[in-house]
Image (cartoon, rainbow, N blue to C red):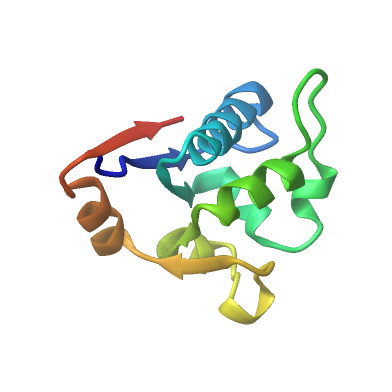
Length: 121
């Protein structure tokens, strides 16, 4: 059986907490289900690439973002968009462990792989 790929781009953060939490939850469930998960942080979710920022996020009846990020990282990758990082002056040295920076070329390559499902929140 071939492992399925799940690429999720999350564009929201504290500005749209329910949409944000849904993206992280779906990514974590995908990872727990055996999919190879790639979570892309873009727009306002970019801030979660920094240590301590996910810990500040609170949404009633939602799993804590740091727990979800840990579950995602266990069976996948978490990537911060290159342009989003630059606009926020976020550098590699500032990232929480397990987060990388990559650009549109890497995103497109991932979503075009056979057996990949891409979702945008």
